[in-house]
Image (cartoon, rainbow, N blue to C red; front, side):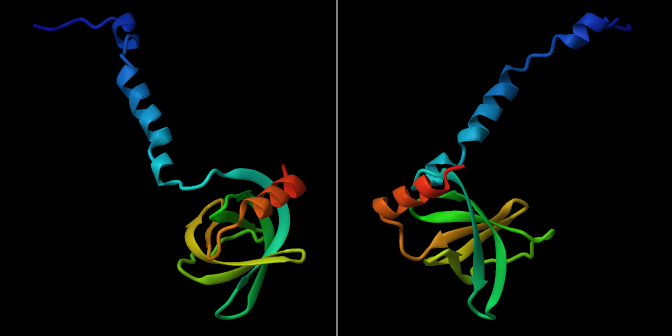
Length: 127
C-alpha cells in the first residue's frame, strides 16, 4: 500500500516544540550571569601580563564583574586564564581572560567595579 503525500501535508509541520527549545536556549545562561551587562564603545588596550604584549582594541560590553574586549587585529589567538591589564585612558583595571570567542575576549575583573565606576564608564562610553 502506497500512501500519497500532498504538498500541503508537508507544509503543515508543527514548530511549537522548536520554538520552545529556542526560547529556553535564549535564557539558558542567564542564571550564570551575576551582573547586568551594558553596551559601550571604548577604544583601549589590553596588556598580557606574562609577556607584556599590548593589544589595541575596543571594549564593547561591561558589567561590574567583567568586560568583553575586541582586538583590532583581524585574528584572535586562543587565550584562557591569562592575567591582563585593561587600559582606558588613565583608567586601568586588572583581570583574567576567561573565554575566547569570535567576537573577542571575555575578561573577568579581579576587583569588581563599584557602582560609581560602572556608572562613569557607561555614561562616558555609552554606544
